[in-house]
Image 1 (cartoon, one colour):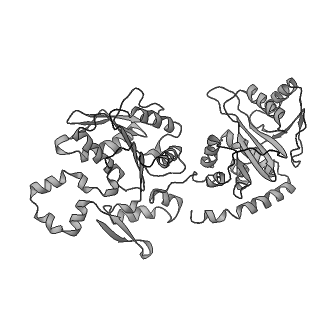
Image 2: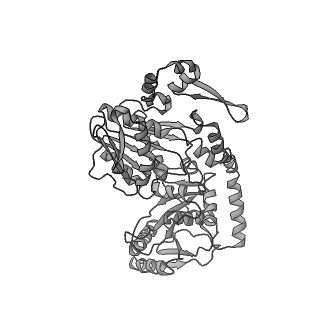
Amino acid sequence: MDCRASGRGGRTRTVTVAPLHALALAAPDVLDALSPAELALLASLPELALRPDQRIPCGDWRSYGFICGRGFGKSLGIAIEINRRVASGETRAPALIAPTLDRVGEIQVPVIVETSPAWCRAEAYAGGVRWANGVTARPATSEIERPSSGDNFDLVWMTELQRWNPTTRIAAWHDITTACRVGPRAQYVWDTTSRGKNDLIAALLAQHDADLDAHRIVRGTTYDNPALARRYVTDEVRKYAHGSRAYLEEIEGKIFTSASGAIWEDSAWIENHRVSAWPSSPSVVVLGLDPALSGESWADEVGLCKGALDNGHVYLTDLSGRMSPETYARTVVRECQRGASGVVVERNHVGQHARDLIKVHAELAQMRIEILPDAARAFPPRRPGTIYIREIVSQTSKETRAAPAAALYVPGLVHHVGQLPQLEHQMLTWSQGMRSPNRLDAAVFVVSELGGVRVEHRDAARDVDAAATISAALRGRGAGRIGL
C-alpha cells in the first residue's frame, strides 16, 4: 500500500507501507475484532511487518545489498529472511560479519533473536546465534584480512560496510565471499550507509553494474520507513544542513566517489579526460620521485610517476611501488635513457641520498647529472647523456601543494594514460589530516612541474602565473560545489 506524506516546502513523497501497517490504516476495526489467538498468530509472522523494499526475494542471485539512509530498516529485513531460511531448512551454515565482534553482538544478534519464530527460537551463542533446530551462525570480524579461512557457509550477512577497516576490508570481503560456497544457492547479503569514498562499496557497485541479476542492490532513504516516529525523523534531519554532504549520505543514502574534503572532489575530473595512449612526440618528459627509506615490506611505497607535456596538456602514468633505493635509482636512470629529461625529487626525508644514488647509477650508464637550481626555470627538453634533477623541499601543507595540480584536472589539462587505480584511489580519498601517500606526492610533483605551477619555491613571478592558471581552471569548478 502506498501513502503520501508532506515534506519540506509543502512537497509530498510516496512511501510504501507493510501489510500489517496497511491493515491498521485501512481497516483498524478488523484488528480490533481478532481473537487473542489470531493476534498472536499475526505477531508470529514478522514478515508481514516488512515493506516490499525491505524484503529479500528468492531467486538465483549471488549477492543482495542495501545502501540506504539511517532508519530504513535494513537489519530488520535481513534478520527476518535469515530466520525464515534457517527455520525452513534452506540454510544450515550461516555467518555474521561486522566491523568488530562487538558489533556482531550489538547489531546482528539482537535483531535475529527478537524476530525468530516461536517454532524455531534463536538465542545468543558463542558471540553469534544458535537456533532451536541446531543451526549455528558463526561470528567473524572484518578487522583481519582472512576472517573466514577454512570455513564454508551457505548464507552470509555482512553489516556496516562503511565502518570496515580500510586496510583490511577488501581482503576480508574476498575471503568471506570465497567461503560462501556451500550448496546449490550460496548467497551473501550486506548493508551499509555511506560515509565518504569507500573502495569496498565502489567494488560492490561495479559488481552490480556488471551483472544486475546476480548482484542486486536496494537504494533507500530514512523517509522510506513510515514506522519511524515523526519526532525521531525530525531530530535526525536537523542534525545536518539540508542538502549538505552529510545529509545526503546519512539521510538520503547517497554515495560519493571522493572522500569528504578530498582535493580531487570528483572522479569525473579523471574519467572524462582519460586516454589510452602516450603522446607520440611530447615536448618534454619528466619523472616525479617521492623516495622511501627502505624497500622492506613495512616501509612506505616509493612514489614514482612519469609525465609528458604535449600542446599544453599533461599526460601521466604511475610507476610507483615498494622498491629499494637502489631499484628506484636504476628505474630513474632507465627512464631517462628511454626519453625522460630528468626527475623532480623531494628531499625532505632522505636529503641528498636520492640524488647521490641516481648519480652513481647514471655514471654506470655513462650519463651525467645536472642540478636545476633555478626554481623558475622550466624543465629543459631531453639532452642525451644528461639527467636533469630538480630537488625540492616541501615547506607548505600537502593541501596547498596539491590543490593547484588538482585544479588543472578540471578543464581537462591532465590525462591519465590507461587505468591507474592505486594512484587514483589516493587522489580521491586523501583529505587534510590523513597520512601522506607517496604516489599522490609524486604525481603532484610531475603535474605541477609540467603545468607551470611553482608552489614549493615561492617565486613571485611564478606565483602570479600559477594564480592565473588556477583561477581559470576553477571557473568551471564552482558550479559543482554549489549545494554540497
